Structures are given as structure tokens and as C-alpha cells.
Image (cartoon, rainbow over all chains, first blue to last red; front, side):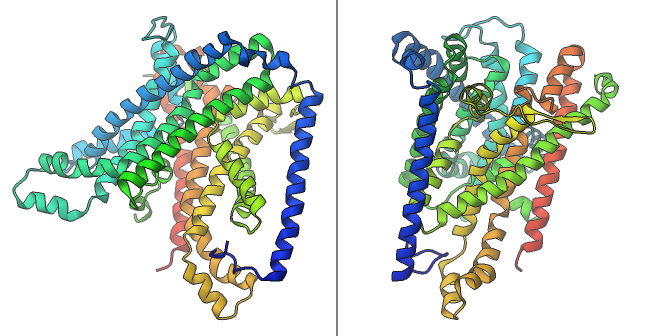
Length: 292
Length: 229
């Protein structure tokens, strides 16, 4: 901790003080954890009956196959759709023609500033409420489609901004050189700018996948399948709400940490320093707007 | 496309957004406070607290918000944590356990993102600033108050504002869990007037977009005001 903006390197007296603080804080944390564990134990939450489901093959299969696999399927479809949506509208927003740029801007802003849940419920009521059709390995996929379509639109709108930021991150000289050797606008975009932009965008796309994966659980509102739904079925049947919530949370967190780790690895391996801030882009606060 | 569904239920429409706005405001205050505590732990000199802060942020940030709501609605009451004692009535608004649960779940969740935003602000201050401040003999509090914090706060306005905007959109999840805010009301109206669902959807979407724009304009104003030339 020697090199911190906030603190100078501690001297002997400060080190002693910090050590005392550490001991007090550790004691408080241990006490809090022990109290939580005791409380759970006292309520009988550690009884085998409540946890039995998670060592029973049928339930484990339900959690992994009907839960995890379906959730990941939803996220993958949504992110593929979002990447296509994002490229189309991201490029359209950079168009030189006002009649392409403006509608693209309106669509992107609309989907980005609205809660994805509102869109999901609307899509569900509009097209899928009475749908009984199945899809791939999913029965009654109405909720599934509502989730995928809503997440495609929302994440697509975010990725449209990421695409724009990615293209702008490509050094200007690249496009100028391409024009100088006689390439047309479309060629410059597709042959020169986009391929280089994709490299910068990859980590941002992967972290957007974490968002999509987490948001698939919003399907709870439209009875979509997936991990949350399976968890709900388990605790409704066995009344083991606390253990189920813990197990489902662990599954989500593990999956998301793996994706985050992948994003960091891709960033370090292929991209380097340049970074697109997805959080800012998602909220619609980028340099472009701040400067306006 | 007719809008009678909305025009006939204008009071319900505004009341729904009233709940959304109330929830946003109280959650914003709570998550700013909690986020500040978390960031103090994460950048502080005590290793144990640093670890605690980052474990909390990592765990909660990677858990879906719906799951946190499910926990507080269906799991927590079993182990004795419930908000049934909350009974506040202001005008026609009822703030009961649905509101309190949404407030707690959203605050705990949003605090992580606020913490990350504030931390990126602290990290944005160049090391040389602190070294120079110490070199001219400023004491710890002076370094903080005069040099570090003004720059850190300025740099953390955009990411904290994005966290709050995301939270404003996340208030919609409370609608699934028994609070009659905007998304739940849209769902109800869509059920009652299913022929006008497109108009209903657009009205509610515009309501959210207006709120989001207001928050982002406030953030831009702050940013511009605190910007150094």
C-alpha cells in the first residue's frame, strides 16, 4: 500500500494503529459471520432435508440442463442478435445521410433509455402470451422469445454505441490513407475501420454478455424458462427458499466471474490499453454528450 | 392507436411514476451513502476491510437483481428478516413492505456500482498531485480536502450518474414484486385494455425516458459546472 494517492507510506506508529484496526475489524467480521451461521442453524436451515435436492441427480439435472443451459442459450441468442443489431445501427448512426442517421439515433436512444423489463413484458403480451410453441430443447418458448427479443433490442442499442466508440478509437490516419488510395466510403468502413474496431470492442461485447446473462433472470416476470424459473419450481415444491436462493446465486456468480475473467484475458491478450467503458455507454453518458 | 386507456387513467399513470420516482430518490440517497462506505473500505489502509469490500462488490454485482428480490421476498422472511412493520402513508401513497423490500434490495445492489464509480474517480487522480501536496507540507486532511477529493469527486460524476440511471431503470423490477409502480401499472392496463397495448407501452416508455433524461441532464450540468478549463 506504499504507492497510494490517498496515503503516504505508514510510519511505525501508524502501522501499529492499522494493526489494531485490522484486529478489531477481523473480530467484527468473524462475529458477524458466526452470528449469521448460528441464526441459520437455529432456524434449521442447515438441515439435510432442505439441501437434499442439491445432491439428488434429478434436481441437479434440472438445475443444470433446464436451468443453466437454457439461461446460457437465451443469453447467447440475445447477444448474437444484439451484435447484429449493434453493428447495423452503430454504422447507421455514423452515416453521412441525415435520413439514415436520425431514425437510427431515435431507435437506439429509445431502447437504451427504457427499462428492459418494460420492453420484455410488452413483447410478451404483444406476441407470445398465448404461444405454446417449442423451440430447440425448450417447451413453451413464449417467455423465451420475449426475453431474447427484449435483450436483443436493449443490448443491441448499447452495442451500437460500443461500435461507434470502437470505430472512433481507430486512428484517423487509417481512414484517410484508405481514402487516399481510392477506396469508397463503404470499403473504408468494412475493410479498414470495422475490422480494427472489432478488436477494441471484443472485451466490451463480452462484458455486455454478463449483463445479458444477468438480465435473462428478468424472464421471471414473463414465466420464461431458465435458472431462476427452475429455482422457483424447486423452492415451491420443497419450501427450501434459503438454500435454493444460495445455490442459484452461486451458479450465476460463477458463470459471470468466468465471463469477466474471459473479458479481462481478451483485453490483455488482444487489445492492450484502449478500453471502451460499457457502463458509461449504457447510460448514454459518453464524451460526445458531455461535450455538447 | 388510441390513448383512452391512459387518458381515462391519468391519475393512476402519474401515481405509478410517483412510486417509481420515490423509490428512485430514497434508493439513490441510500446507495450513495452505502457506496461511499464501501469505497472507503476498498481504498483504505486496512487490508481486512479492503478484502471484505471487494468480496461484497464482486458477489452482489454478479448476482441478478431479480434473485436479490426473490431472496428478500421469499427467503429472508423464513429466517426472520421482513419489512411488514413498515407502514407509512403519505397522501394517497402507501409505503409498505413491498416498497421497503424493493428499497433494501435496490440499495444493496446499486451500492456496488456506486462504489465502483467512486473508486474509478479516486484512481483517476494522478499520484503526483498527492506527492506535491505532501511535499508542500499539507497535513493528511488538507491533502484530502484541498487536493484529492475535489478531483476525485469531479471524475466520479459520470460513472456514478450512470449507476443511478441504471438503478432508475432497475426500479421496474419492483413492479414484478408487488409494488404498483410504472411497469406493474403498464402490465395492469395492458391486461384491461389489450387493444391499446401499443399506445400504453409507448406512454410508459416515454415516461421512463423523460425521467432518465432529467437525471442525465443533472449529471451533465454538474460535470460542466465542476469542469476545469
